[in-house]
Each structure stands twice: as structure tokens, then as C-alpha cells.
Length: 74
Image (cartoon, rainbow, N blue to C red):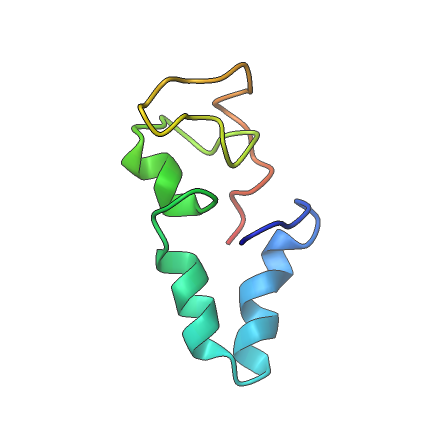
């Protein structure tokens, strides 16, 4: 499960790649199930959301901001 604070997101993939964890970095980047960046795209998000679960599996949006930079720095 992906559970990071937004301060660590810009470092997550480079640190994994720098420590011979390229497969894990790619798996995280390309995952399309919640929680993930591609899940938001898959659910039709117009931009990066404030929370990983801003959209329910049926596509229902939550109360979170749908235009938030917090997790968008991968």
C-alpha cells in the first residue's frame, strides 16, 4: 500500500531507483488501483486530488479537493 506524506513524494521514486529498486518504483508509478496516481486518472479526476481515495470505486467524488498539488510531484 502506498502511504506517503506529500513531503516525501518527490523523493520516493528517485530513492527507490537509486537503491536498485527500479521494479518497485515502476510498479508504484504504473499502479492504477487506489492508492495511486493512475487511479485518479482512471476515475476521471481533472487534476491531482488532495487524498488518494478522493474517488470511490464507483466514481463518486468525496469531500476532498480535486485540484491539489500534494501528491503530484512524481
